[in-house]
Image (cartoon, rainbow, N blue to C red):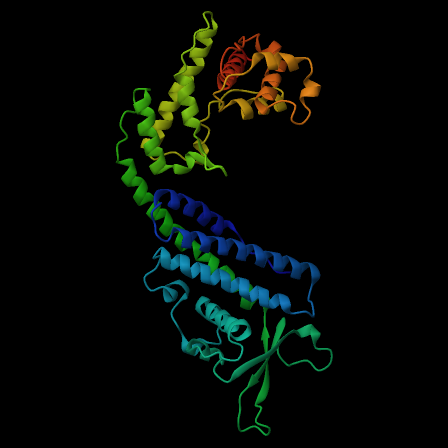
Length: 424
């Protein structure tokens, strides 16, 4: 049974590279790094799939999968080399990564350098240059000009006389020798071990991602320290200037916080949770009763969250664990109908239009009919879900319908907030 390739170091590199792209958006090698990363990902996945297939099916007389295994392993080696060079990870490159060249020690496969060199030689002989392998670095493995690959076979496929070599796979090689009786040279058999000669070199390559990760982390810290010392103006007063300066800083520091959706008609829409919180905090609506105090209580809480968010952006301290800055965060939904809540949030949250109350009232007592495809708009359906929940919500905050869709959603959140406050 062959052990699959561990993805931990790759996953870390994936996360770090995404953060690197955020902080270095003008890096001319951005697309190259991204493609190399994709090559690593697909190469690892394909090798693990092949390992699973080999483990499940056992040895097969068909050796076609061997070629795919070699190709995918070389895909990983090539992608890793690109990443190392692009990030200038090490000064002396290949030697520093895998060890210095040792021509006299070509038989010792225990050294990382020898394993990588031997894999490169196998790849050249079996897939790249089967009739013309002339790389001088392969001479220590007796793979030189005049060595021709004729076949690759599973050792188990030899039904009668078996070559006197060990390995999962046997390479049938012709050695050029003009002094031979017929001038065709002689046959040689070489044994290849799947794990030791192919999969293990891949593990060695991917282990070196740790060095890459350290370099990328260093580059990230350098840029984060620069931005940390770059003051964001107007973070104290909750006005339009506050939002403009904060947004500019977020675009530079955490651009993925702001989602831009592009549509086929060329229209673009921007979604930023902070924008919604800001709009809610600055919503000036008077109910003329105790609802005004309930609204203000939630607005004050969200205002404090906004200031906290701004401080984290200034200090370059925003991370994935902090991505809870949404208008609905911190409001308990326990006991609330999940479907109704999801539709109200999905269809009303960003919509500034006003509802046609007559249309909504028309369907209130015919929700079953309204649920049919294309009977009502998404917004009307969300309002019907809100109407369905309203008797229970009015106990905490009576919904005022003479507002926009998104303001209905805001009132819905205030009702949930008050409900949460009193412990229900």
